[in-house]
Length: 73
Image 1 (cartoon, rainbow, N blue to C red):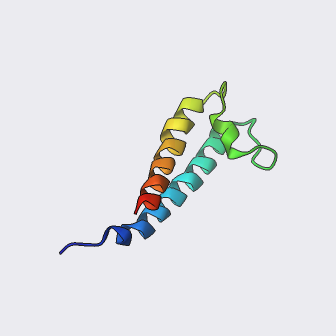
Image 2: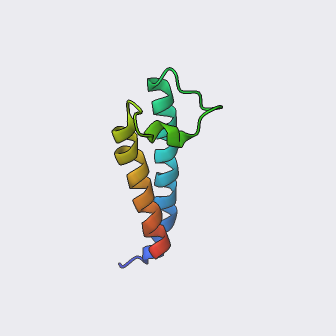
Image 3: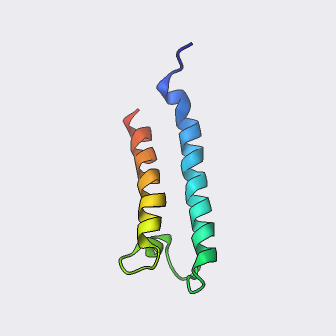
């Protein structure tokens, strides 16, 4: 049985949203000086941040690739 590529778009969107939510929660717990009310999530991946590589390559890159895959279908 062949499934249409767009049938996976919903799951990919859920995975993407879940990864962003988990990453936001996880790194807020790890960085005691991060305040989600005053700072944007992009500050977690900013140059000089202690977890910049982990956030950029572990959250932002996979989510960006998922969004790219969704727009290409």
